[in-house]
Image 1 (cartoon, rainbow, N blue to C red):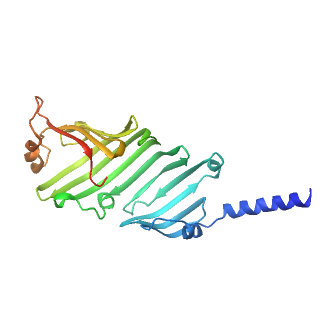
Image 2 (image 1 turned 180 degrees about the vertical axis):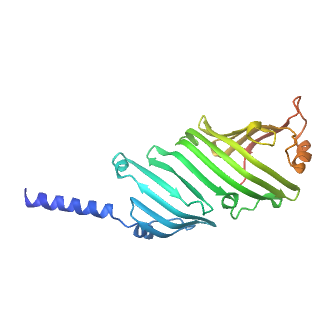
Image 3 (image 1 turned 90 degrees about the vertical axis):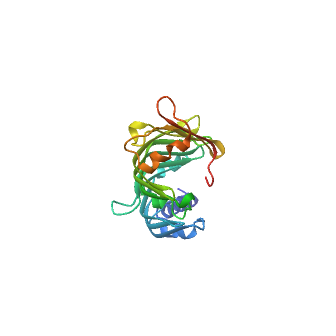
Length: 253
């Protein structure tokens, strides 16, 4: 073997060694992070590491760990397994995410977080306050246009309480199905998945256009303030349902 070949092999081995052992804290220090994102307590390497805390605006995510597959990079994609928090933290979750030139895919995602995390800093109309927890479970997600190519998941709103200047609305537990309809995100529920007498769909389409097609009927389990306000939705149909229809852009979305 010639001297040149030995030098080339040595350089390749050296670069591979550097790549494998790139420290996570150094990568964080040079990464062009957005101004509203701060990562502290980074340890490990690019391939397997953890961060004690990630702050995004007023939201804090504790104990984040990741594992990046080097074999996926050889195929032109980044495959990452992640874990967030534990039973003692406000936000917890785990799952697998893959990114390539064709877009983002995710599978076996589980996230649990309080409403206060989602709404941190938000100014809701009518002095509205929302308390409760959210659980997201996604079996598979494949990015598409405008939003998705494939989606199969569930969204659970747990112990949801809404309070505003007009009343108090303990909404309880609401289960929502997540799916993809012609590239649009569809959220659906029915009376078997909530105690509100609510059934229908919400579709998020291109340019953040939202279409709501739903209906609700009075039930004994509904909060009194909610039941008393249903008549403002319009006339009941022959089955006792009030219509809930909307099409347009949600402000701030």
